[in-house]
Length: 230
Image (cartoon, rainbow, N blue to C red; front, top):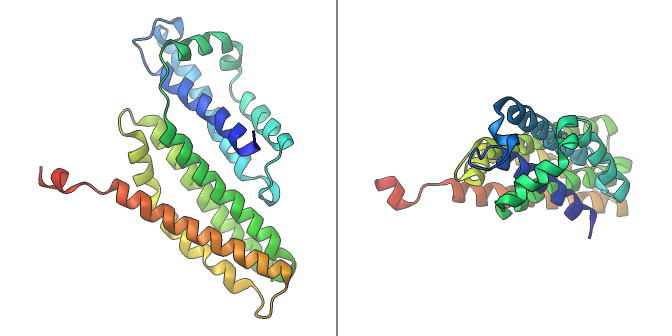
């Protein structure tokens, strides 16, 4: 299993546990005890956000086993009560599974955008103006982090059509980020070398990924003709 899949498994598990805790029809003290349930949901939300942020900040976009362990450690530090209740949480989740493949796919797309962006910046770094590259890179990475966390929080809060609402919430963020990411290519010297060429290629990939994601998610969020006529 590669590291991005391992990270997505972890994030999937945190998201599903949060949703299970929100289902008061389950036969568990974790859901019947309102105070405990609220505390656990708050911890799981913080753990998921921390895990996502740690993945996004991966140096050079190279997610390796050590980084995944760091992500897990950072997340665990945000949810002491959930860690202590690990067995009961697992039983609660298994009582009725609620898989959400769209959430996993979307999160993979957003995390990949950040990792590809870091890889592009690392490749461009030796050949471009460092201060300009850092300023632009920080802007794009911050925007991608904000979009990813907004997606996660929206999906977490939505009961039905969660991924649709989450996609709609971040479309404009992605469009704005696309325009900024497009400036990466302009930073590279005209003649170029192997490093610059790789950086330009990776930068173009990021822009294309952003454009396609925003386009696809805009189409998915648009109401159908029948919905518009209702």
